[in-house]
Image (tube, rainbow, N blue to C red; front, top):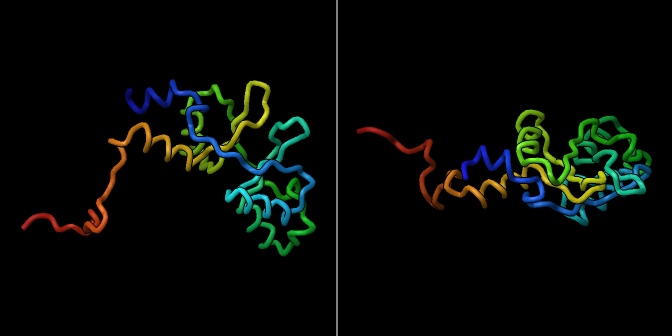
Length: 156
């Protein structure tokens, strides 16, 4: 199948999903950072008691807190969560994630079930894995040890 038609027809559930740290909005930034380290992810998803995403706390949030001179132990994730976060349903087409990444410069995308509960996380990495797995012939690969294409001499 062609790439653009796959984006329009494949559901988001076909993307690689990661299990993000699920945290309460009352967590301190330092507690959220510890949860992010445990999962080896650059974000944590703020969820309510029913597991519905309310926001996202990323490493950019940490940089913002530190640049403002605030304490990571005092600031709650609700106070300093990223203002922009994207939520899609697992039955939505992959193109929704693709457009969020390309047009809105989104790195992380929360994926929910039909009830709005968090199922997992995808984003730039998930799309990269999807493209390289499903469309390997469209991914330019350079052999190890080869001269980079932009340094190759053309002509005589």
